[in-house]
Amino acid sequence: MNGIYPMWVAAHGKQAGEAKVVELAGWPYPRHLAGRLFPVVVHGDVEGAKNVRRLLVDWLAFMRLAPASARAQLDRHIGYWQPCATSHLA
Image 1 (cartoon, rainbow, N blue to C red):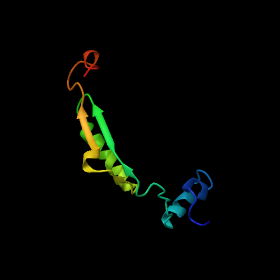
Image 2 (tube, helix red, strand yellow):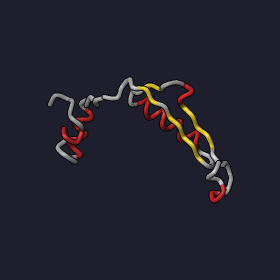
Image 3 (spheres, rainbow, N blue to C red):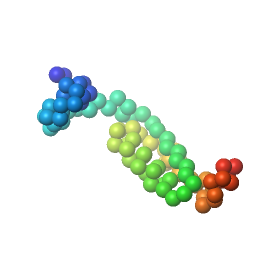
Image 4 (cartoon, helix red, strand yellow):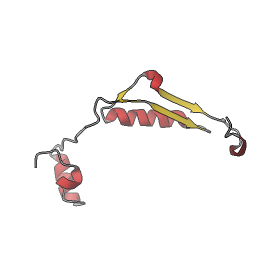
């Protein structure tokens, strides 16, 4: 095995024992998206948009993608605390 196969190929399907051996041997996950820029725009109608934005940015950065800029990370509330039935125009 040359180390570029996905985990499920290297472990012959869903063989947990083989998957653990491959992982502990230092399986080099191919990061084919590394270096690509990303923006994140999250909107919500109640609390939590900021946490979702942070979670997505952290996850993409962990995969070695690069934030397009600080201004490309946006979270906003639309129709904050308004009834759903009347907030769609906002």
